[in-house]
Image (cartoon, rainbow, N blue to C red):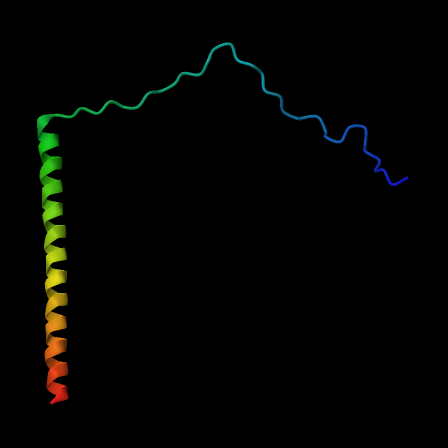
Length: 81
């Protein structure tokens, strides 16, 4: 009584069918990259320069933070007097 009535063919047939091909598609490989000594040296020098700049920024930030803490403690001591 409470069973649903299903249609005979619930899905329509596909309108597009894929026809098999005789040959497999050609696979393209990755392009070859030639690494010579100049390229390696340039990458290494660039890495060293960027690392040095990052270290300089970090040292500057630490020194500014230390100077701010010292000035804050000096000003706080002056306000207590």
